[in-house]
Length: 225
Image (cartoon, rainbow, N blue to C red; front, side, top):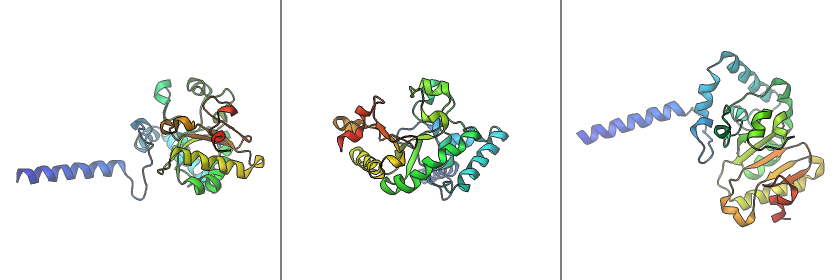
């Protein structure tokens, strides 16, 4: 009887945890090893602490939907400053981009919807809009497209080997050509393929590719073409 009681208590506690952190019909997409600070649950707590913030986020979601990109990635992920570095830099994990920059992300999301997701599957946003001081803290380029909310850093949601991931991404860029203005941060070294995080950068501000050194000669695409 005592054992049965303990089992029932465990089941009830597990059910309560699932109820608190899951939402019906919505998959919680959280990168491997990601701290709780950047999770959906953390965002939900952050956004409701300020009525103006909540209203601004609702307006942001409506804006994305009005441009047919509302379901490319969950809108809340586009408020992540950087899921890997926010704690290091003592900055908020989330930040709603200024309204005058919202339009800048539409071409990027359109590219993701039409070209990237069909090729590699669902993706998760690791970093989007950054302020100048935060960008400097995380070592971003001085003219980073993140400053204008015209770039995202992503990781694949599905299980895909790093070599296969970057082979596909580089092929997409090559097939689309310079007219696409696709900028691809291909952070991949074939000699250290198992250590790569699978994180990559996308923008549509100029046709180019680079890697860990922020220069074209370090682009992971050089391993395939």
